[in-house]
Image 1 (tube, rainbow, N blue to C red):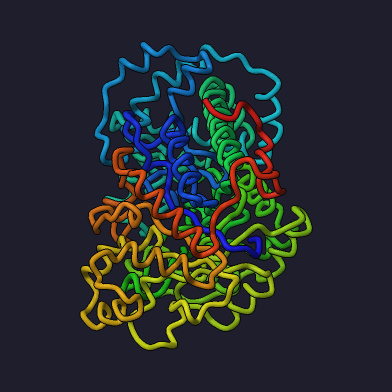
Image 2 (image 1 turned 180 degrees about the horizontal axis):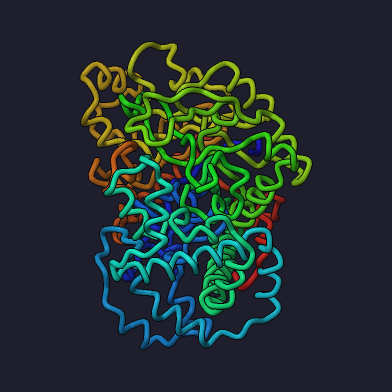
Length: 546
């Protein structure tokens, strides 16, 4: 990141207001960007933007490249002439206070199919397909096959592929897991010819599902086009977008299916080991993520081509990228497949600096920041510093022990990003309500506050710190308690669903944030100041704002 002071808000688009069951890329996203500009903030951080699968987690997506079609704005499609306002107005409204990706997609799907039927590809569509050739054909085929088999299997019938799947599990899955994964059409439960990507089987599916494949391609075109509008509008307001790049991909993803040689999978598609972290602050039994781990030697042999294309694609969507679980590039924690907790895992070496050198050679720079929370060894710290990447500090971790705590602002180096909390933390009010009296006392004395408004006390502390960058979740700006928490690591279900309403986005919050940004030297450049290199529009460049 640039060596200058800046501040911003962490908010995933799924949390934005909309009538269709999930935040989208319609009017509310532009209103939020206007709020950031009025608040004098120059950064907007999002979570991964990919199509979510089981559990709705943006860190468990069907693709490391694709965008989430549930976020598509129907309002934008009306303005594009692909839908009518009457068609959109006829949709039933879904609850506004929670994100429901599945419900939103089910609601939008018939209209998206109408838009597809009315769509006439042009030069910009052809350009998008060419730019996305590394990943798009495999992703579109993956989604078409998965949706086709899912629909067939909802009849409850079990055919030869079910018997093959049961046999291939060889005691690795319970009967319940077998049924869940088979009827969910996870790719390694597909007929073996498709699992093994035999040419004839793939060709047969491409012929049979040609319209479904074209529809999936269309949805990705729409997503990248709508997001390009959002990014161009933000950049014009001197606001840079920080994207999020998970280190691992979902086992049930187009990436794992189409490039099985890059992952530690057996011939049936099952992982020998899966990713996670050992017991830590968030969980006494560790976190069992279940993602396949990489065959790093295979990646290195082809010059980390997959990683280069992945980062290239994500930098079409963001100005900067947060690399989630950075410590995994030095060494990553692998747990035997089938384990019930993460306590049985062990550490294995990662690619180290070689990967980042390859990315820098290919892309010319490293507009990255490192999520370096958790068990951080001197070797991990040395890798981060050798790559020149800023690390993260979380203020909610700061008040538990002594003045030497590395998360206390007086111990910061400038090249870091300070957060009041992240998407994995409670809101600051929720945090304050649950910590010990000793921690509360330390917090009050350190911030010279009464503890009546812990969220804003931490926002002020972050703004005043020596860290180059300060980020805070919107929940802290809105003074929300733990009921607005985005994610509780290790908890199955009930995560990623928080949303807000525009009525909560008070002008007084923008005024107060602007005052703090000005006071502590973090005010973003005015909207009409000269454009710098960090504010270049996306390489997909339709109109700025719907």
